[in-house]
Length: 139
Image (cartoon, rainbow, N blue to C red):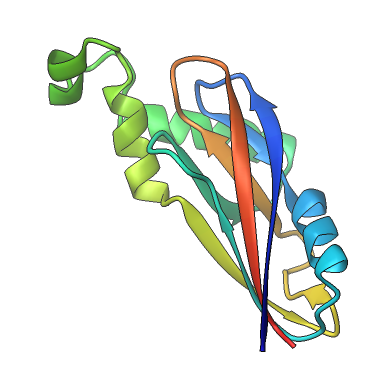
């Protein structure tokens, strides 16, 4: 069993910006030169999340609209009262999604559905550079 850790960065617009990171994760897996195991994709921070979806124009509109309905930007959040930074909604949204996602791989290929991509969602209220960590465990 080997453990390989890789990382890459992406620039985001914030405000529920959704970025397909599947190819960068695949590149990290290729560079690790492992055949079978699992990999975990992780974004440090408390205002972004990692998940999967079909990365297509309709869902790129549906997801932000969904988050706005259930965790509205502009509502009152205790976090904002404490820190005054106006991003309480982004913390709550990120907690719902989580900061990591685990994917199995076989013969050096991630096991993803035909229309399934790994995405980063940046919920913060400003542009960011997000560092993504990919930890790969396998043989």
